[in-house]
Every structure is written in structure tokens, then in C-alpha cells.
Length: 338
Image (tube, rainbow, N blue to C red; front, top):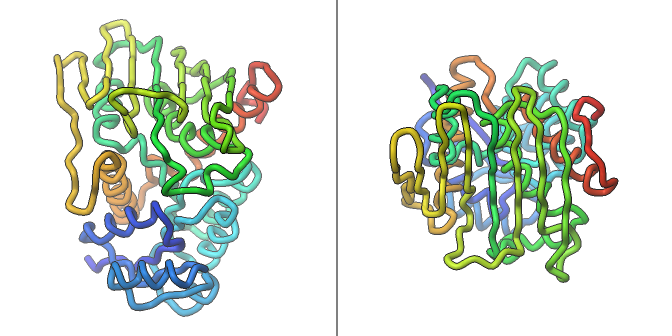
């Protein structure tokens, strides 16, 4: 089967991981890059040996014969770029957060569906190998009926050093990190009917919230707690691990610091590999980038919807909106109203 021809739009901090992962995957070639920052574009093109570069996405779509595009920009550019890709008739994988609001998200889903193409969200936390193992155990019914869960991400890691724009937005931890942890909760326990949330800003140098605690009621009957913090001082530092506790009628499991899983199979070491281009402590996320992009290619080849399709991700994005609404108004939010 011929290799798919792809392009990446956005050459920032995290896009380097995506480009490394594409280079490792045998089913695709990245043949073009697009970024409005000329220096960043030139440096990235040289690093990955990509000859064709563009400052304008419209010009790129007009010239290139692409099978797919990987949109690795910040959220404000997502809707126009996704709709542009739909008009060009290419499959799309788009960075999270998928959209700035639910109206934009629904419009993007509709545009790509009308074009008959695939739209997947790069929602990679549920694809981390340790988290994936937990999902497999739960979905196999090994814990019985799950009635409680907690997914926790607490750290003092300086994420602003590599992504300084994160300090500038009115929204921070729920939109940037909490969306991942909320998506893990959905992957484990199913969709949510109602939510209550509180937020705090501890770091005075940022504009948005850096602590959030969310209580979720799931349609299948479980209750889960999702808590996130970039203001937590831990020794040793656990960034970027998600710690998970789950109780079911047949047993419990705990994914603890250091990728140690205690559950129905005893104690398992789920330490992820360090890929040749990866580095600690980011290696678990970097591995998940490779896994999710492989899933995208497999779904295109099989003609099936990805697990983290944009249509599915509408439910995760709704949790983000519900969390902010709950925190601002001090009330429980019913998801059906969003």
C-alpha cells in the first residue's frame, strides 16, 4: 500500500514530538510544513529534512496533493484550518483543545463529515501505555461494576518555560491539562451527566487557574474525581504522570507514581520506553504521540472512526465548558444543557 502524504501546520514546541513520531511511522510521509514564524519554520524543516514549506495554509492546500494534515497550532486557528482542510478533501488530526467553544467544534465536525473525511483529535493522554493498560482492565470487566474512580495530575513542573503562552490566557489548567484528564475519565467510566468544579490561581505570575477539582457523575453509575494542579510541590516530582484509583465490585486498582500498577494481576511495572528521540520526563507523553498517530493511520486504512474522533471529543470538550461554568457560578452543571 502506498504511503500517505501529509503536512503539519504549526512548528511549535509540541509539534516537534508529532514530527518525530511521523518519521517513525512506516505508513506516512510528511512532505510539507506550514508556519507563520519564518525562523521556526526554517529550523524545523531543516531538522526533519522537509523541503516544501509555506507561511500560508491556503497556499499549501492549493499546491500540495495531500492525504492528511496534522494541525498543531493553538486553538484560535483550529476552526479555519479544519474547514480549509475539509474543502481540500483531506483527513485531519487536530491538536487539543479541539475548539474554543462548542459551536465551533460542532461546525468543524459537520464540515469534515460533509466532505466524507476523518477528523481525529490529538487527545493523547488516554493513549499513554500505562493509562491504556488501565483502560483495558476496566473495559474487560475485570473490576466488575466500577462505582468510584479518581484521576489525579498534581505537579510543580515549570510548563511555562517551553510554552510561555500558557501563562497568558484567562483559562489555563482545565483547558490545557484538565481536558486530558477529563478525557481519561470518559475513557474509563463513560460519558458524564453532571459536574461540579472549583478552581484556584496560586501562581501570581499567570492569568488563569492553576488548580482545579472536579466531581463527575457518569451515566453508567460511577462517580469520579478529577483533580489537577501545577501548584503542587512534590518530592519526587511526578510530572507528567496521571495517577489513577478505581474501585469496582470485583476489586480495585491503583496506578501509582513511577508507573506502578497494583490490580487484578498483582503488581505490574508499566514504565514506558524512552524512544530514541524522546527525553525524560516527557517520554510517556512522547510515546503516546506515536501510538495515537499510528491509530490515526490504521483508522484511515480501515475506513473506521478513530477512538478519539472529533465527534467523540465533543463530549470531552463539553466537560471543559461545564467545569468553567460550574466554577464561575458555584453550581452543579447538567451536561445535557450544554
